[in-house]
Length: 154
Length: 154
Image (cartoon, rainbow over all chains, first blue to last red; front, side, top):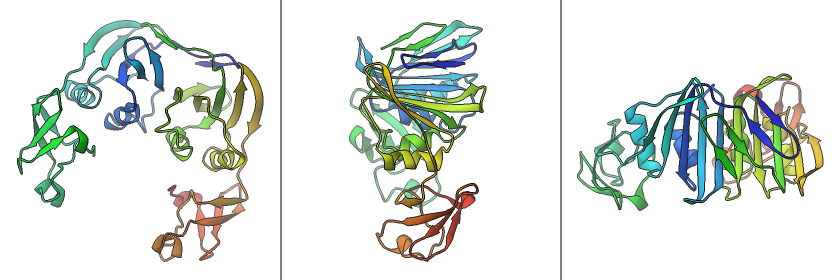
């Protein structure tokens, strides 16, 4: 599937699977992790810090035989708001989705407030996105705001 | 650097950098992590679960403008004993190294013994490799054996 000589590494066409393109610099690993692809057994390719005319630097992920549901695409949107998710079936593009920042964030982010019940007991976090441009999440339980700078992914 | 159509993802030749080929299945992420490449700012390309005539499944890492010292190649050897490290300079193969399991392992592995000083205080671990085929490491401090099944990387 891969030919590797001293000049190039060529990756064969994807028959079925997903390409996640235009991932912002520095978050490819986080996207892999949030989608549970770090230990995935399908063929997977990842590129980071690649040149992009549109973005300067970008990352890309290509995974065989995996397709993502709307809630997974929303997770990508939170971490990589510029990303495009391209579904490939039988070597053809079946769909191309520009991700978006979701209205509600469930489970994947830690609440910034150490006293929040979600940090004391095994209660999954739940946030409302109250500002999409500056990314501010209001906790459903303690109502404290977790901002872009304080976001930690679980 | 990358052209991506619905059929293929092509990666341009590496001018200067390193290719780590024939990484056993399931350890590509660990190799990235132990070499500190997860947050590297150079162009990096990774493939996992790829078909390999020799190995069944394999992983590969390709990183621009990074070269590895002997102690780093030994770290790769511990995690990925089948790997080959190929150094590229000016589009040509400068050297090709078959990694080996090192005689001494410093810092990268946790001691299996919870009472060991390295788990109580901030003392870096240090092991002697006493069995390379079955991978057994004897701790310099507590003399307990950490085996392949119990190895945790730090």
